[in-house]
Amino acid sequence: MTDDAPTPAPASEPTTGADRRRRRFLIIAGSVLAVLVVAVCVGGIAFVNAISRVADRIDESERGVERTDAACLELERRLNRLSPPGAAADSRQRAAAVRGENAAIRPFLTELEQIREDRDAHWRDWIESWRQLVDARVTYADALDREAGGGEPAFFVAPQGRHGTPVVERLTDDSPDSCGGAIRRLAGPDL
Figure: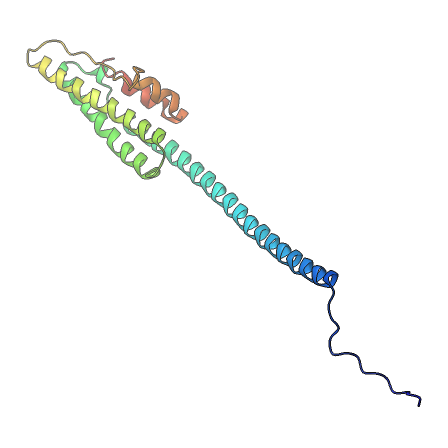
């Protein structure tokens, strides 16, 4: 009897050890590849976010520099409208002139605080240096009032920073050029 009919294929051929290893390798390789693709995507997104944050900080810093320059120029304009203390005829007038200049500084300090509310310690120290200068000028104006009332002669004592560095030096070194004229004028109320 000849059997021309095809023999049915077995339902499932037994898998050999090599086939199982190959299938396991493909599954593991596919999983590793998927993990690598996800890691590259996540890393790429993190990189783009980091670049975006750096660009935002640069933009914010540039805006801060522009606003600081504008605040310095406005301070100088306010000071230029006032008579300098050195032009006063007596101690009482000089004290009033110093207080007038101090009043011109207050909006400047407020503007600086608004420019960089959350800035680093360096920025806060710079603003504190301005405050120390104003405080020394207030003390000088008070001494001028005492001098005018017959007390001892008044002298301006320039404030010192934490490490003995004059506050005026710190302000000059750390300020934009637009603040230079105002710093020089405010640093010498006795001139």
